[in-house]
Image (cartoon, rainbow, N blue to C red; front, top):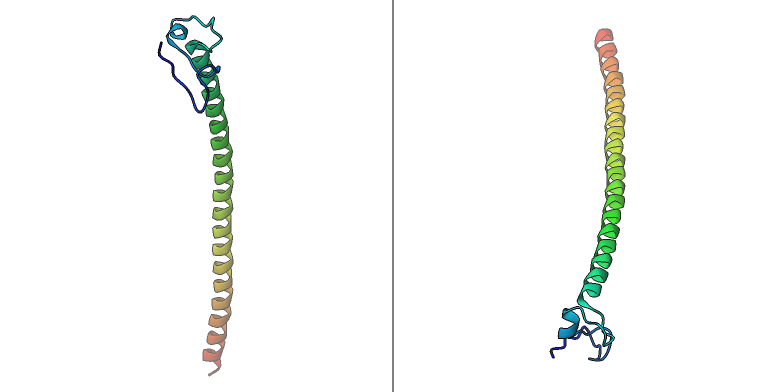
Length: 102
């Protein structure tokens, strides 16, 4: 009889299985391979769903941050452009008035 142990479980615990449990005989109280596989699949599916939900949430957050960055860049560009236009317009008008007088 071959026994496999998971973690620090003792050979008589529910976390071990033998050749009989591989054949579907779980009369000795150990968990069968199919039960373990179903439990692992259920756990893995839950973990996959959790990771997918986290990824969706993080993607949504990143899209919002990208939008914030783009709006900030556009607002900065508009402010700088407007300021430069006003400054240069006033400077050009004052230069024109000085050249006409002089």
